[in-house]
Image 1: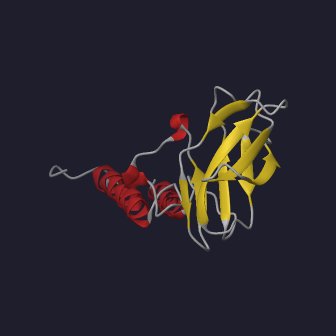
Image 2: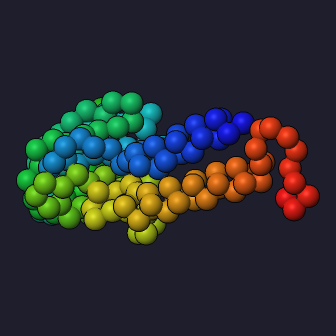
Length: 156
């Protein structure tokens, strides 16, 4: 029983340390997922600067897109169908050198407390809190179950 709980604890701590909600594509990357309501028709994602000029166009594959080697600046991502018809526009993206940012659409907006400095996903504080919760829960289970040999004492 203790061995199983130890494995659960180790797995929980490992998962808490993984950036599962944020992708790591390397520096200078803007990535995202098209809103579910338009995913079936989405063909291209277009990166535009604040003047509306096209900076880059990439295909949407499996509802996802990635812009690599993006220069610092202010951008939006426009999702288009095969006929270049506008399907969705992301919120503005303030992009710094070396950053990795997720383009957010209305359906994918996350609370500010869960977002990292422009990168989206869990921040360090969120990961620490999840890890602490996993450790606390596992510790409570181990204490409550007692040892594998014998019965629990009357004080338990």
